[in-house]
Length: 286
Length: 286
Image (cartoon, rainbow over all chains, first blue to last red):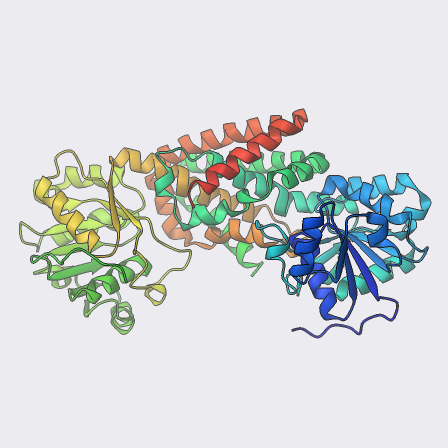
């Protein structure tokens, strides 16, 4: 277990709205630090599963009950439900409470929060932990999921500095490392490293017909692993981040056209050096 | 360890030309069956490494010495060297010896072998074990690499049935399972499940700039794993299988265009059902 900064004195009680893979893992990490964690789920059975998994200390099917008296509320729902849950949480929180999220898209959420109410906008610091899996559900959550992972924070221009500081201190307690950028930068970059790769993964899976199916090897299996991810969650991400994804799909498509021309042209040395550069780029992330 | 068919009485000595990841793994699997394995490599140091790794019983830097007296020669070189090595092996082999290979492309190799000499064409049965890794070299070889993996055999129309039978019996001894198809079917299907996915992996790696680099998560890492593969080997594959790859790149590109239109059109239900289908396709391979 890594060494974390001392737990802030103000951080005693955290509510997690949506205790799935990511929300559950945040809960487990916080409970290890002695923080009281409360879960919210629409279904009683999900609350029980979260308690049994050790992700939360208690669980409620009412947002108000789950959030009242908490120092931090983490909205860990699909991206298209985040604003609605944040609004509901805001109604029962103290003024100096923090609301944060784990959504994979940021610009639309940050804009909608700002348009909702000044009270909510003062409390909300958008975040996105770069941690996950094609697996879903609290049964796959682990206390170490965020350890050493980047948590991207995308505060709005008008977010109070005190809220940003609290959010950073909060996320450090999960084992994450903080990196800040604008919501737009986040969305364009995530389109490049996550959303478009996800769609390409699904595309590769969809192009394999019955004759090809038995021939798939470990390369194809790796490349299509994320295509097994939750379609509902990914539809919401695609809709939320549509402009950045379309933009990145166009970059990808253009690069694909150049690659095709390179291959068709028969310049073997140029093809080899293109493969060399891609390999070097890959290895720069190791 | 799986139960294999009894070792054929005629199978006593096998030469492996090119003792890397795949050749080395074949050697290890055969040695476990009590078959004497001889390696060929241009470099003395590679011969020593193959012996030290347990992939071969002895190693030679001369093809003739390595092949003389063998019942089977496995050409495990990059695809652009296979024919040349098979020709050299043919010169010193008995008439009823078998030559096979592990190349990732088949049509060009089978055509060139047929054009070389009747003696070689009678001995040669093209094969492609669907097993590998982005790792290379005999130091990553394992005796179990081929266990339960498909070995695709692509005999030519004129290949003698006895040679095809011997090739099947030989590959079963490595732990592989046999599937036969035409060289052209192999190449088009492999373009779909391996060669184009490889190029797409390299493309995804090449599109990540310095700002995006820290944001990559497990999805991107999986999708770009094969981009770390050997560029020389992949250049040879792309050149050999150029027509099928171009054809498959065009399919991919067309499907990418449809996906872009789907996303731009804003039909959320259609996007969700496309993602559902891709997920089902992926899961059909589990």
